[in-house]
Length: 257
Image (cartoon, rainbow, N blue to C red; front, side, top):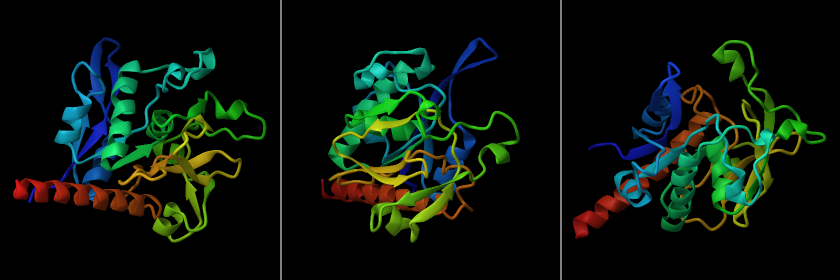
């Protein structure tokens, strides 16, 4: 039987300074295929090419990936400043309504880094443009130098809420994660539950209160070494199980038709 499909949100790039491309990191596809046991499908983040309704029908779940451009502050009612960095309004136009539709339908998604921030904004929350500029906060950005292994190295603890979904999934309240982000949650959306925090108080793990489907999202990058990392593996396995369950539900509906 064919594996269920996970739509992987791509990012826009300019290859060789002139060739527009939609691309996704290979580690995203590897995590989806080998750990979640689903078929990875790269989605162009351009509303002129894809529509939310057809994505919901074509895919069983979604991986909301990280990316260098940030969610535009107009999406959460604030003005653009230099601290907000670069943007991708086309991706905003695809992912934000997609997230809200998934929550309403109970269709599973996993948010990662920018995807984590998109979930908060889609559900009515706001973002800090630069975490490291806040009093008492650490620099959560990617180290500028070193190998990929050094950049994705485990750098700080995340503490989960006692008895929360991340605690139950991981079997422990404290884990070590990488950190490669500049922005972060300022005000959680009304239905956003902050279920894990870094030592400096930065939200690191969330889910959507009352959602029928899988909505776990993290500020770190679990796709790195997902098959071997004791934190990443159960997260992608749980996401995969939710996607398989959604696909089986759709298949049962088709058989009844």
